[in-house]
Length: 306
Image (cartoon, rainbow, N blue to C red):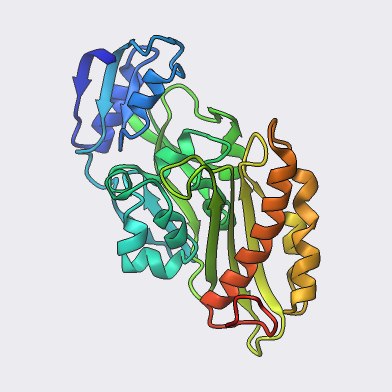
């Protein structure tokens, strides 16, 4: 059971930041809340009994503006920290600009959890197998961090690859609050996402891979391909070797097959390494072909071309 002395529901961001700055150590922010009780019950809060008491819980669900998605003038998107995973299935703006997030959201938990769980919360949990982190790495995401200091709001941005430091560890400092995720628009790309676990949904990923790809105008070469992997080590990572091998190169099955074998040495998980390597090779191939198919391009000889 999780208990607290004080439960607060601010309605403005400045109020929330001020309350967070004044909160006692160990207090908790609550956004979607889908990981808060598991955090307490599963011993991650430091008490194996599942009975956890904190001084203050600050519930952000009433804070205006945290659920806003904005197109920025530099070809980027600002996704408020209150945006839930279900929005990536339903919001036309998000579906157009982040095509690889729709298949990610499809396999994220179930309908009820998707309507509560936020993308920002999934990233802040810093799970090696977080579904939302690889797609945001693909989109060159930054984490927007706000704090209350000197009677005003201060702001900084941290690249997602520098924000997640290890299992359950992030670059958050005392008083920091994630207020948005800022990322590239990938409108015009095809997107794909694959994951595997004990089941395909309602499960922590054993491996997940996200990809966006855009062919050149004549459809013969990769104009831009981006990929990231999760569940293979302490933090999700960009598959830079795959990107370097394919970008600018021919759209052929042979090139994709060769690239699919490149990230196998990255598998550094403590368990089931051989299995994960096999999955990674198959998933790299599938997400590249899937992202191209999302653009209406099916390569000759592709086993999915039926």
